[in-house]
Length: 129
Image (cartoon, rainbow, N blue to C red):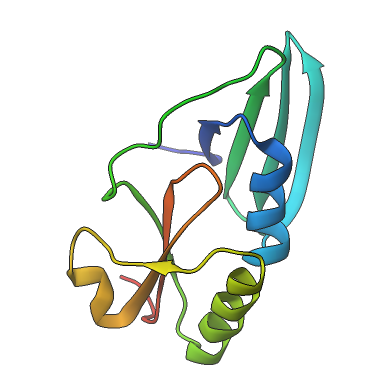
């Protein structure tokens, strides 16, 4: 199977706050956006030239949605502990502190933080799989 790109798409009713969290807080880049597309505004966030990115969309009438379970995660594998600590401190200043993960595995080498929608990210201090 050949796949050109992967997009992880999620609705939000706080597109500005979510964009600030992932760009200013986490340090990802805004790589695209649209507005007024069949009633939706959206932003694509990721790493330039990567084959994957996040998309957040908001309907003009609002897109309220409950956060998924506490174990539904976006995990960022980051081998540099200093970079994780920098991001953690930056997010804390923005009002986003660490939370206890539902699965204790994530505490072993990572930290868990909720984004503005209540969805969780894990900054995992390992090189990945």
